Image (tube, rainbow over all chains, first blue to last red):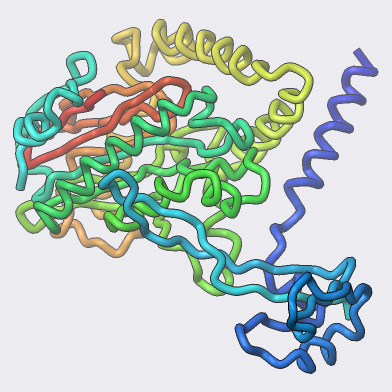
Length: 108
Length: 306
């Protein structure tokens, strides 16, 4: 009985801790990060200034254009901004989540 | 305003009066066709809960209801009012708060918003009014809602946990109830149906005590209760009618007769005369664990539909 009581108290205390945890806000997440927002046509220099040199610079994909490149960062944080978009499916109104914005971040 | 008969006719046989729960009030209760959607507890059981039983057809059925209500809304405009009675989100058990619930059920959330649904807060989604309490942000959630007829408040809509000893979040007993729910939630990892077993055991105990009124036979000599919250809500309506509340309504604006709630998962509709007035309590049931009920009120007419 004593063991059962101790177990109950431990479980109660542990679950109380989960109750005390507040949900994380985006502001809290971003307070420890440096982020850059993706926009089509943005300058590469903006990215490299914010993120530093890439970890991997692969060779170009097959084709005549050597200027089409990719740059890879490992261990960066990506934030997707999501909204709801109304669509019609089989004549009915439905909603899908769509990405409206992306931020790539590194720890300060 | 559509009558309940019009409403049923338009549903083309998909809506039926649940048990015998239909009655006429002694006065007008609403000036709009008012549809009340009870507890849904989205994602209480993880990413594939489909309203707890893991049945995708329940989600389809609910979407079918929303499609029907959206058509009515587009036809009837402001003559239709939709109220979600709380516990739409299960923030006690769902992982990642509302965020992943929206991801799991975007069409449900989107359609309810599109219909300008009025959201009342329940004990499982009360965090929505607490996260940004200091900033006054409640995500459009209300503690309770009212409807008017003939210039006076006639119906009050709230979740129902306010009447519940173990779930009233303003009380210590409610805080303990929340902890117990969390512990049971943790035990589900070991035995997934533990909450169902404990819940039905508790219900049988409460039902037996409630039915035979073991605790308070002197105060309630008739020996059984029609609804465990009936006294609470008649008391609340009487207090409102006499101006004895902290709300800003004066007694001349208030003539409440009906309380509409969810929370218990057991649909019921009843009337009780008291002190020269007739009071009504509509418990709209649930969309959890196989429940598929809604409450509907039009003028004097009210019913629970399945």
